[in-house]
View 1: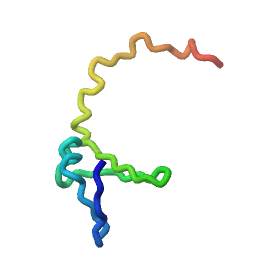
View 2: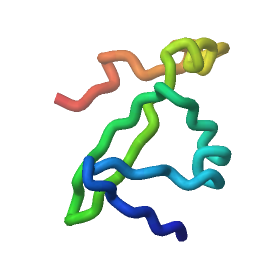
View 3: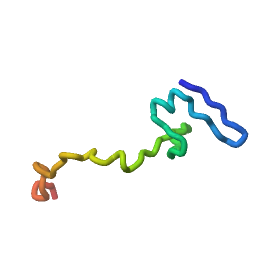
View 4: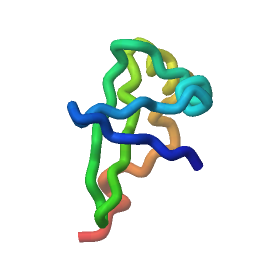
Length: 70
């Protein structure tokens, strides 16, 4: 676990090891979410990186509407 200090301008520095592990780059964007008193920082990935993640997915063997309960 790393400790960071909040500057007078309310800035923090992400430790080098975390930057390397998460492959963070200058100018990258993050979403900050407060949940139960904890701040979560989530890197926003470029949409280009998601290309091809659903390769080979088909609708074959998916239930049709006749199998639904009314």
